[in-house]
Length: 170
Ligand code: FEO
Image 1 (tube, rainbow, N blue to C red):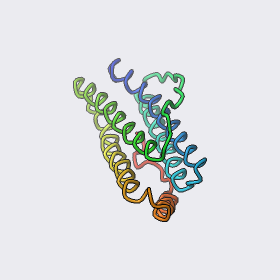
Image 2 (cartoon, protein in one colour):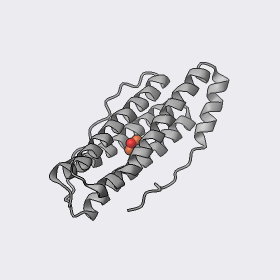
Image 3 (tube, rainbow, N blue to C red):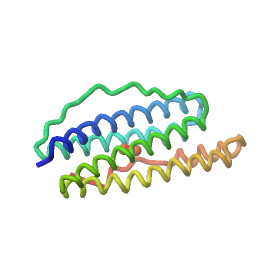
Image 4 (tube, rainbow, N blue to C red):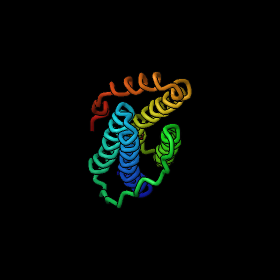
């Protein structure tokens, strides 16, 4: 049985993850317009992963007999005026999401809600990976972004990212 507080936070996270998907789709859209199809691919797959995250929270709530309430998804509000801005917005967003996951974890810990803590362990690890990915992209762009040939190669590398379903199955 989830406490009211934990259930509310988990329900809010459904919306936050769908917003993340929407935000990354906007990033993909930005790079598509720039003609950088590899970057567009990378963020489109990131959007798919975020949608998966939303569905995991949705399913976890239902599996625990908690009602899911779907709220409006906000419009992506980042001003994307350069390639580096997009990458930095991505890192900033992941740090924000890590804070959200940690806050749910803290609430579950307070409740001795070990089931929710175990569920969230996967997300704690995932956030670590996503922060690393976002940081790596920024480092590569700092190194290679100003040289057209290197940017082309980086774009080709990112074109190789393929979707895989989350390792967490509920
Ligand atoms: Fe679902 Fe990137 O956090």
